[in-house]
Figure 1 (cartoon, protein in one colour):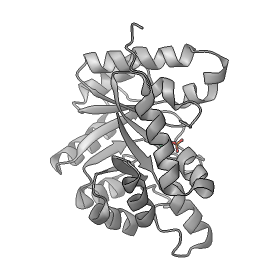
Figure 2 (tube, rainbow, N blue to C red):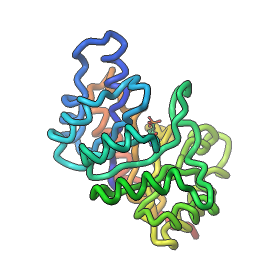
Figure 3 (cartoon, helix red, strand yellow):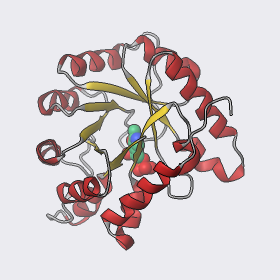
Figure 4 (tube, rainbow, N blue to C red):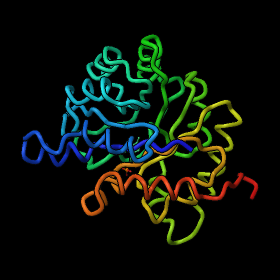
Amino acid sequence: MRLYVNIDHVATLREARQTAEPDPVRAADLAERAGADGITVHLREDRRHIQDADVRALKASVRGVLNLELGAHDEIVRIACRVKPFQATLVPERRREITTEGGLALRSPDRKVGAAVRRLTDAGIRVSLFIDPDLATIDRAAELGVPAIELHTGRYAHTWRKGDAALRVLRRAAAHAKARGLAVHAGHGLTYQNVQPVAAIAEIEELNIGHSIVSNAVFWGMEEAVRRMRKLVDEAPPLTAES
Ligand code: PXP
């Protein structure tokens, strides 16, 4: 299971003072030293945290994978095609949202997302689509010809204490996506308390985790925060959809 650490909120803290610290490049370096397989950042249209210069600096400094999250907006897609991260994850983006709320609501056919997928793919970038764990949406993603999807774990993250219904939905979605030939990623709202049942889903090969790691890095330091998450992910017992 790959662990990619989302460092947007290191930039959120910097932007709160519009100064030079904390530096996302330094955070990425420490996260990689502590066992992160990749670094994820979201270049939002409103540039509320990560800036264009951060993406360029991270492309030059990250040793593992750089995963750039982006909305299917012309300007941002153009920047992605120029910077060429290894992976781009298309997400829905609304201006006033606090964080990405819900996955891409793919239409059939979806011209806007389809055009962004083609431009990114033509630039040599591996494309993933951030979608809800819904079987019809997974089928639409497969029709768009992407190699990967990221399942939105938000509903699971909000309800895991009350029962395993959302986990079962994630398991079924992961098995369905894998059967359709898609690589399965997952993320959103995962924490030290709730990550293991998701990390145990055998079909999921990559987790993107940000807020919980950066929050705890305030107390433990970035390396320790990543090490502890890495350990939980690695120690999750493997399960299949049938178990
Ligand atoms: N994956 C995607 C597509 C996201 O948009 C986010 C939030 O930026 C995450 C993963 C990470 O979510 P969290 O910060 O809640 O761990």
